[in-house]
Amino acid sequence: MLIVLIASLWQCLGTLASAAVAPNLVQLVGREAAQKLESYASLLLNWNKQINLVSREIQTEDDLMENHIIPCLSIPLAADFQPGSTVLDVGTGGGLPGLVSAICAPDVRFTLVDTQRKKIMAVAKMATLLGVKNVLPFHQQVEHIAQQYDFVTGRAVIRLPTFLPMVTKNLRGGIARSETDGLDGSRLGSRLGPGILYLKGGDFDEEVQELGFSPLRSRLDRWIPNFDGTQELLYFRAKVLPDAASYKLHTSDGDVFPIKEARMAASNLKLTQYRSVLLLGSSVARAFGLKGQLFELQKRGTTRLLAFPHPSGVSHYWSRPWQSDGSRFGSLVSRIARNDKANTKKAQKAPSAPCTVTV
Image 1 (cartoon, rainbow, N blue to C red):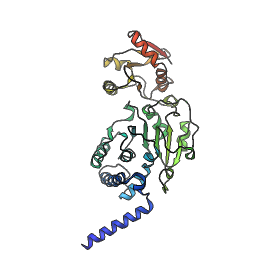
Image 2: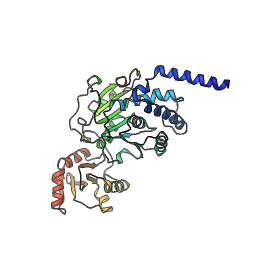
Image 3: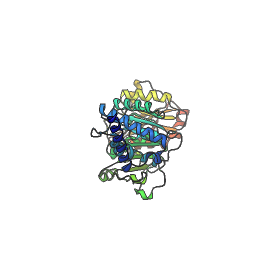
Image 4: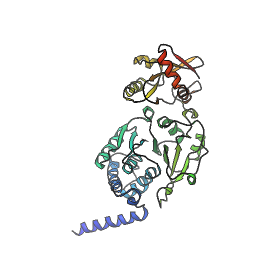
């Protein structure tokens, strides 16, 4: 009995100590979300002992809360999530920040993506135990995801010059073709609309310089009272984000999609509700018998890509960064987007006649 009392007292003292340095979760996100976040910290700590979901140096739930979960709260607190909004969380790992955001925004739909199957399985099990039903854990590379979302989130996944080109295609609402001047946090509105929200710590000025344009930056204490960490929330608005043509991206020459990806793309198009343009290399298209109006995208007389329109709905593109002979993939997509209506009409009137777009 004495041992039990001592253990209980020690736990109470630990709780009081953490409350002194951590923001009040109930005031920030409400009682139900706060309880789920505390349960999530316990689950994540146990899973982290089996799978390296966060740092192995994390030994207590308080460490998880202070260094990982609470910083991630800046995203659901800052973002202007509307009921029914969709969010793609890239490199979710143990559910940071995706599962944290989903707990705080139950009316928003989250797709949590990671390249490691074991991490996705852990996140799926934790979401089930927590009763979080608005998440879709997905084992996949983001380059292979065609769907578009209202928001894209991430937390120190990779360098910014690599991360942004991979995910801009997944941002709904179109991508502006001009650069932002880089606003600081004091000029941000009360909530952040659709765009990319990225948590980043340390010195990343060199990465921003390499991008060629600046994000809107804010310290986390703007959204989380009394937070004294060094991480920042970077915000790239959908309407001012440069398109993929602005980035220096390289992949191998030849077909843009390997066979496996082409099969996946063809399968996804059967389920889509949008009028899509599927961009494939000619040999891949022929191998799968994909039919539709042929658009030849030429560079110095050499056909590189073929686009197949898919009828119904609004524009949506299955694309992947690509560069060959100095041609940039983003410019090809942009050209198709600008001529989309005209190309579709041509396809309907003369399905056997290819439309050539020279770049």
